Image 1 (cartoon, helix red, strand yellow):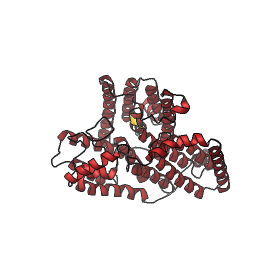
Image 2 (cartoon, helix red, strand yellow):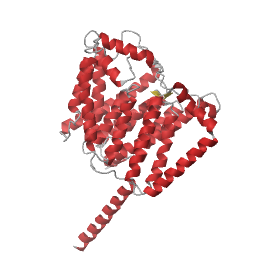
Image 3 (spheres, rainbow, N blue to C red):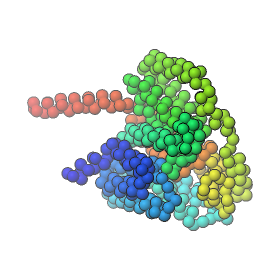
Image 4 (cartoon, rainbow, N blue to C red):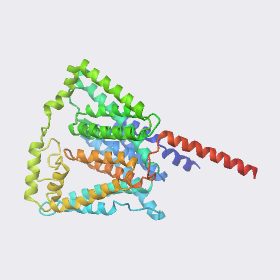
Amino acid sequence: MFKQKLKEILSDDIWILILLTIGFLGWLINIDFITMPLLGILSLLIFLICDDIKNVFAIVISIPFFINSINTTFNIIMLGIALLFFVIGLLFFIIKQIIKKSNFTKGKMFWATIIYLIAHLLGGFIGHFNIIHSIVILLMVLLTYAMYWLALNFTTNLKRYFQLLFITLGVILSVQLLIEYFKVDQPFHLAILSKNIVFIGVQNINIAAIYFIFAMLSVLTLGFKHKYDYLFSLASLIFAICTYFTYSRMGTLTCFILLFAALLYTFIKSSNKKIYLGVGLTFLLIAILTTIIFYDRIIKLLDWYISLGFKGNGRDELYPWCFEKFIENPLFGIGFVADETVPTMLMFDNIILAHNTILQYLTSLGIVGSIMMIYYHYKEYKIAFTKFNDFKFFNLLQILTITIFGMAATKDIFLVILLTFLIVLSEKDADNSIIYSTQTQHNRKMKKEKYNEKKEGSDTIC
């Protein structure tokens, strides 16, 4: 009885808020050396007790934002302990399901993942092979597929879960971004123009921009066909503004393109078109008046984007270097770790981060691996477009966010796992036709309760 109650508690969506709050507090008061192992223990408990293990995903995608530093041996040890708890729980759960012979599926991305793994293991195979690098790649791909397999087979209500997760994480990241600007040794109105924020936790600010976009799209998804959908649309603008203040050029450009597409789609499908249009025009009028009144200050906000334009920010040296290495090693590339210094702004200056997905494939995997990766991305988008519906429209925008972002930045392991979750959402898509808004779900619940009451009454009469 106690175990069943504990299982219900640990499976509740409220853990999104609890887990992210623990991580945030650890970051805020600089006790992440305590909160990281604590989150590891909680992930272990979820794996040991729950049948629906989706709450571990909140930890997986948010953890880099809540680590203050990995510069000391002590912090690395604490992070290692947290990872150990997670891995023990993960292996226990997988072995338990195999022993139980649970009815699970390998998923539509299984063979695509095998090809992904082979392509990456072949990268640098001729002349640049390194057994340690190959083991690291193998472990990372296995972890990614494990997250895919778990999400596909051992979760329920995953759509709503990720909507709430992205929104909650978006709110917390906005608070972290604000705090980081307050740390800048300038008055706030100047600090917010300083563009000095490069990391939140140990995660790059560009990745934070992606999460703000996901939060924005999740608000629109949650409010889709809702009675007050226009209010959800207004709320989504908060995260669009947060994206802007990351000063991620690709993030900001992607954000406003996808925001326009999402708002237009929501308006077309809305049953409140007149109110929606009225609210939109009112907001636009306010924005125009604000621009006229505060023109000089707004120009200052735009100045950095205007002055930087399409400058490479280091890419003008990195791209030619990567292309040169591809020309020297055209078939299998040179892998992901170079024997020389890579012209990059990161401290890991021998790791090849091409800041462009196509160039990354050519440099690291060569022509052979790049061709193999075409199949992986074909499967990814085939799943996204199969039985296309309202939910899949917003899901596709999120997938496109990572794809577009990859044209000018590097996709780390966390983004790859995040993309895997998006594919699962599209593959599962249990509803198959519509997004069930909060109001719709509430109405269905009420009808079910009334039906059960009538049924109990009829049973009593009999």
